[in-house]
Amino acid sequence: MGYASDRLLSMNGERPGGRGGQPTPPDYGGPVPSEQAPSAPADSTMRKFGGPNCQDPLGPFPQDFVDIRKVRPSNLNAQPRVRRGGSAGTFTVNCGRNENGHNNSANMIAAPGNVNGAQHTHDYVGNLTTDGFSSNESLAAGGTTCTNGDKSAYFWPIIRIRNAGSTAVDPLNAHNVGDPILPASVKIQFRGNPSQQVTAAPQFLRILTGDAKSSTNGGANANAKWTCTGFENRITTKYPLCPRGSQTVRIADFPGCNDGNTDSANHRTHLAFADRNGNCPEGFEPIPQLRITLKYNLPRGKVFALDAFPDEKHNPLTDHNDFVNVMGERLMNQVVRCINTGRRC
Image 1 (tube, rainbow, N blue to C red):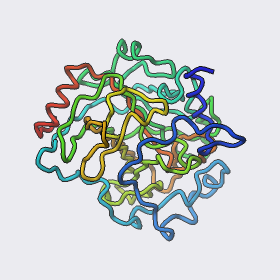
Image 2 (cartoon, helix red, strand yellow):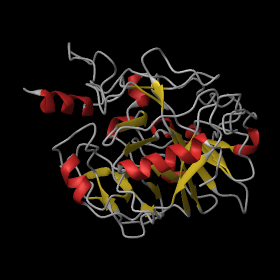
Image 3 (cartoon, helix red, strand yellow):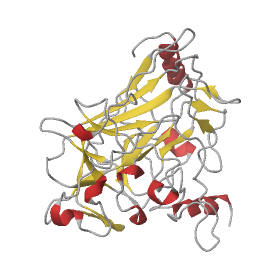
Image 4 (cartoon, rainbow, N blue to C red):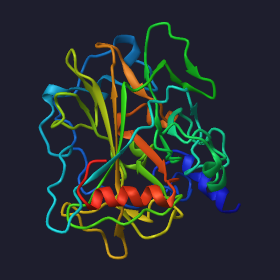
């Protein structure tokens, strides 16, 4: 079938190993975050929430939601303590909130050459040309929404509000229904390593974080982090219900170690997460570690959900994020210098 066709098998939504002797999805496996968000306490999830909008057999369900005030505190959102020899700086890129409406249901990393490879809609910022048929050459030639000229592609599944009577639906994926809502803010920040200096990430590096099929794949690659403003020390894998005046927050932490390759057969094993002390596995070097923070003004009491594969039933655990580095050498070197010299750029 060829390599590209093999990669399309990762879109089947099967558990590892598949059914009927099907092979393990190629984008499964690889690096596991050193610290994943803990499960919500059993008595904290909602038993009744959302009314008819939580009765759809495709989800979400009341137990997918949690009162953020009942989530136990953790340190997953804290900046790690930088030791001697580490890199304490940050580099922030302003690429907007997708005000220009760049959306599609493709995924150029996991399902290249497929107009609907994701089976859910993504918001895109950065590169203006990103779609299922993007190549290194087309991305390099594209424009960008980033104010510093960064042509990288940053994308994530949209959130929809289940408003009564809404006719908004993904035309290719009828299981994704509801009114799309843009983030109120998008923060794209590259961070350092607690124990080492970072090195330049290679141009056209592909990085996935989280797993769009985590509820059927078993959750090993899950990296969903949800919280609310004012409660950032409480991280959960559930959809958080925030008090009045508090924004809903999604945090996407990407692997910060690379083996020098821009991709791998499963789009994961050329990368690794540093351990809690900042150490990369043997054969990997620390690179600027990307964190994308999305904040939303969501109406209180309304059901909301991620776009997702149909088998995932809009599970909040399936939150994920994608990045293709299209920074030129000069800009990437600027990122590295800022981080290694401890500046905030």
